[in-house]
Amino acid sequence: MKTFIRTGALALLAATPVALIGLQAEAEPNRTTMPDIGKLVHYTTVTRGEVTEHIMTTPEAIAAAKAGQPVPVGTHFVLVDYRGGEVFRYFVMEKGPNWGADYDDGRRTGDWQFQWFKPDGSINLAENTARCQSCHTSRSDREFLYTYNELRRFKTD
Image (cartoon, rainbow, N blue to C red; front, side):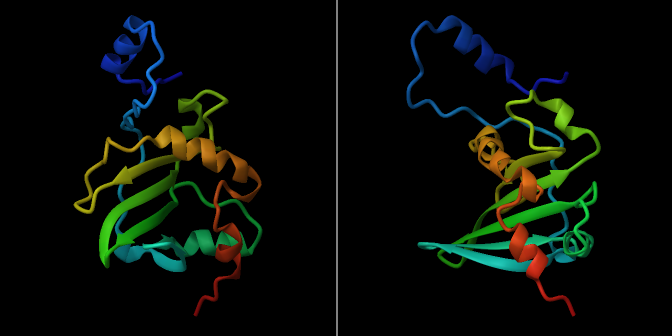
């Protein structure tokens, strides 16, 4: 099994006998890639206080959800996080063939992997993707998506 723990962080944890309260773990690189946003369909918007999130995916994912079929391998979902009218970050879910095997059972979200990207498209290693996976596991019956129902109801042209 492939493990995505940074060696330095592992050594720090092994050498530290006390709990590391308040220390935020860094995200690890994984297989998730930044897609071409221009090829995705904006199917819903979520507003949380001052944050506006535009959520996008492929036409094929929308068609699969509407037909009650699994979202195809190779699909990206992107949450574009806007703050103050500017892109703050991109949250990307990507489904790959057998990508779930990269994680133990407690962290696996089907074959989905997650990554945060900065507005310039580079990976934001200050974000912890394990937190994303732990939250999305509760949506296993909906392709691990919080907006699955919106996806199914989206009106295509």
